[in-house]
Amino acid sequence: MDGLTQSHTGRSGFPPAYLDRVGSSFTDFLAVTAPDLLPGRRPLPTVNAGDLTPHGTTIVAVTYAGGVLMGGDRRATMGNLISSRDIEKVYPADSWSVIGIAGAAGIAIEMVRLYQVELEHYEKIEGLTLSLDGKANRLAQMIRGNLGAALQGLAVVPLFAGFDLDAAEGATPGRIFSYDVTGGNYEERGYAAVGSGSLFAKNSLKKTWRSGLDAGAATRTVVEALYDAADDDSATGGPDPVRRLYPIVYRVDAEGAVRLTDAEVADVADAIIGERAAADRENVDRGA
Amino acid sequence: MTMPYYASPEQLMRDRSEYARKGISRGRSVAVLTYADGVLFIAENPSSTLHKVGELYDRIGFAAVGRYSEFESLRVAGVRLADVRGYSYNRRDVTGRVIANAYAQTLGEIFTQQTKPYEVELCVAEVGAEPDADQLFRLTFDGSIVDEPDFVVMGGQADAVTGHLRENFRHGLDLAEALMVGVRALSAVSPAMAGGNGNGQLLTAAQLEVAVLDRRRPKRAFRRVVGAALGTLLGDRSAGEVAPQGATHPHSPSASQPGTPAGLGDPAAPDTVGGGDGSGEGSGPQAGPADGVGGGTDGGTDGGTGGGTDGGTAS
Picture 1 (tube, rainbow over the protein chains, first blue to last red):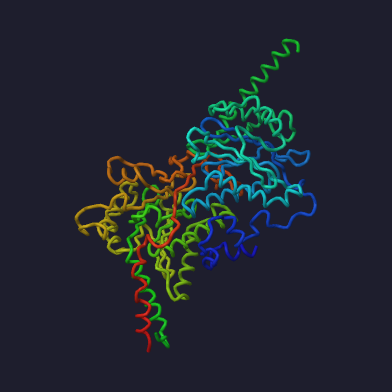
Picture 2 (cartoon, rainbow over the protein chains, first blue to last red):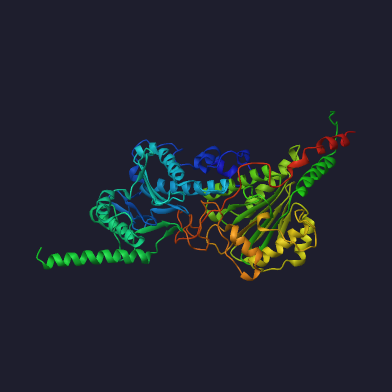
């Protein structure tokens, strides 16, 4: 950590690289001044290291009339163990975008922190924020840098969504981008899911999501998709009324990115559980 | 041109100081004042893209006068230092004092070791949870650092503005009052005002660059006050306090009330990402890309100072 003691403390003034005016990327700057702080610049494990870190699971995102919603369950697993019941896997990337992560939690959280600083740094240096496509592309480059670790079982697969301030008149301002471990970047139409429960979540969204939903109805599709994923995927956690743990849901609209309160999400989740329970009782009554 | 054989250190330093001081006083003034809810930056700056005031970090702002290219590279260095520290430790570990120290070291080094000193004067302001915790650091071209309690005036006719502020500044002014006090002080000596002193004419919104560090904002305290919000604050004092608005750029958030949009990393939760409970966060445009305007020191500084003083010191 030579770089840390020398250049980050500011004790001896700014090192020459700090006064070099070129560049508004925080990642590129770290690569010059403190490469040890960057994920993807470290020696790779030589064996599969996937068991060393918890893995985050299901993230879903849907567009709606006013923007986009992203939700994630609260479970992290290590092999057959549940390593966390209350992990947070959806984060605001900046005022107008959110990022959800599936995969190796240790690396994913580091990557999200770096990505948040990257966007803010650009904003402060340049005086304006990146376009939504620019942000999505920047994230792709970070994922690409993690390919080596991904091959050793430490894959990170994010889902990125944001409100496009440059959206054309009539187009939905909410946009969703999905990624693969090689840094492939795909814009999704309508809805998307990543993680171990994504298959079941997408099946659920296929039936419940329609274009032009309002925020309330869209929130329900997100929570219901996570419920369905938890129903069939052991690595996805369902709503937990005993511990009062509910999915984390962010809404990004013209006002910016806002996290829905636990109470709001709890209401939606409880309504879904109530309906499912009622439907099940009806089936029993009918002798099914 | 002959090279001087010997120049005494006193003479060298005096020449450099004089050179830097001349450059700085040629520009327009910037005033940084504390007010009830934080710190207010007022710059006389007709350019809306080449800023003299900027954001360094969550609670820390920056103001500068002098040569634009020089203070802009210092501003960028400050942002880099803040972000690297915040990333490698925690957001709470970035303080105004650390950044001010780095500026002092760098400016001092440049002043003593390079032929041409930086023609800049800086203010690093940090807003605390309480008014007592607000800090204003003034940094001069030679690396001196002073901790000022109430306000800092830099550039142009700084002494005259300071005198004016000393008479009118009070603690605990609200935003509109503080802005009025500051604008009056700047207007009284501004060369842009036709009659000069005393005719009571004030600088208009178009001639001013105004920003605040608002302690009530949960995350990034820095906001530019532009457009209609600035007009209201300047024109109609009876309108009371108007929340600072985001900037006019289409990429800037429209919501400016505390707590609306979500923010970056929660300082209350060390080593985690993400705002815990939807803290506020937004952007405001900062510096423009090009050099050369802003301070207005460029015209004429190249003409003679160097050669003239060299000749004088030859013995």
